[in-house]
Image (cartoon, rainbow, N blue to C red; front, side, top):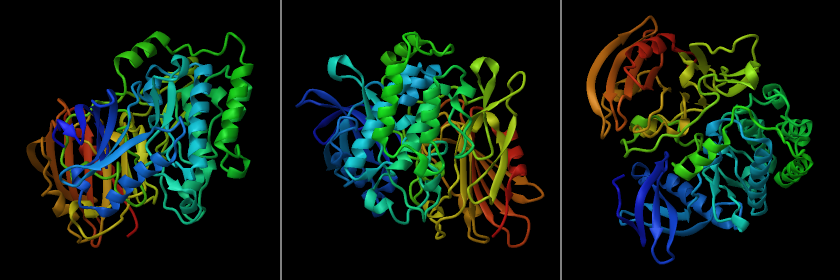
Amino acid sequence: MPFPDQIGRYRVERRLGAGAFGVVWLAHDDRLEAPVAIKVMAENWAFRMDIRERFLTEARLLRRATAGGVVQVFDIGELPDERPYFVMEYADRGTVEDRMAAGPVEVPEALDLTARAARGVSALYEAGIVHRDIKPSNILLAGGGTAGRERVLVADLGLAKTLAQASGLTVVAGSAGYMAPEQAEPFDGIDGRADVYSLGAVLYRLVTGAAPGSPGKVIEPDRVRPGLPPALNRAVLRAMEPDRERRWPTAAAFADELDRIAAALPVAAVRSPERKTQARETQSQETPARDTQARETPVPERQPSEERPAAARAAVPDSPPGRRTLGRRGKAVAAGAAAVVLLGAGTVVAVELQGRPTTPAEIRVTDATKRISFEMPSGWADEQVGSGWDPTVLGLRTHHQPGLTVAQDVSRWPDLTTAVSGVFVGIGASGGGLAHKAETIGHTGCTYHGGRAFTSDAWHGRVRTWSPCGTAGQSLEEIGLTATRSGGPEVYAQIRCDRDCTERTDGILRSLRVTGS
């Protein structure tokens, strides 16, 4: 989307970031003399009425929840080309994800941030809304609180549902590592306890620096970071109980418990030896909300979102890269007693290691259907979305198919201008034209460097190479493959990295396995 001078009556200052459904701009309300964040529906979705309605629903739900712990919507409108936008309060201090850039936070701060986020979630519940995608990047931080206190705001309701909708059949949606197990079971229905699970995962991440493992396999926080208060350990584990009947009954109850734990902490509360408080404070002052309010959710209901391949949309202007630590490359925690690695399920978890912590150079990942698997560099595999993709975004008639995105940050995957390494693989039907279609895709703002043939025992096809797509040193490999066996599937893939991807691409494609029909 080109840089606009004006959106409605708001004067645009700079771009904050982009997601699959929209671009977020920092603007100024000259009448009220205040900064605002404006989310504008992306041009490539303008013709999709269902996506348009989802976009507007997010604004309506945010407006319904008027409590102080939820980001507020001030206005809604349309551009001359009829794309909708909505105007939100601007969170000037980034996100909880940004706050963790220096490592695990101190226990009192972690308890406070989570408790206040939980009260925002409770306000949503009182308004009849279940969020379904609570995670550090969806919890915003802003100044202007009473007595100079920082405000904590829940944002991004792209996956939210009213409680009436959520109580029945619902499609799998959420973010790996933070999603309650019932969200993966479409017939179970969900309620506010799904958000309690996610809040527990947020607190786990805050105090350990690592996202927890899959439900039922969560390593106790004090084994990752020894010395945590036992009451905190118990509170987190109860929030993340696989059986929702055993969790805290509400987000408010969880918040109350965290407040009690904080009040009982000794004066010399547990501190993180890795964390540099001064660095955190400097980061908060120097990099306010680099892409705050611009992150989209990676698994919308049967709609292509972050897991949608970036080739399905034109490249957009440069989006400021996010920062993730501890877990990105297996960084050690707890004085060498553990390391952060990524398991086959695609969730970054902390596991105990004997001796010096190490991370495998390559790791095999698998999608939710167990049909797609491949090996890739472990340093790219921070986050995974594996619930499928929609080939109609490429102009094909086939609808929802198995697909898998694994990347350093899946929320940035749709924007080709961002520096993120990872892999996307989507399946198409045999003879459906997917491999051929992959050879016709263009990318605005990227430089095409030509194509080459690829052949292995299982696949044959063509690899096309693009760079830099707005980020110097970045490379995009785009691949269309056909199975060598008769009647086998076709595959569309993208591989992105921070240098020439050729050698990595060939290894990934040789390891690619697609089973079933």
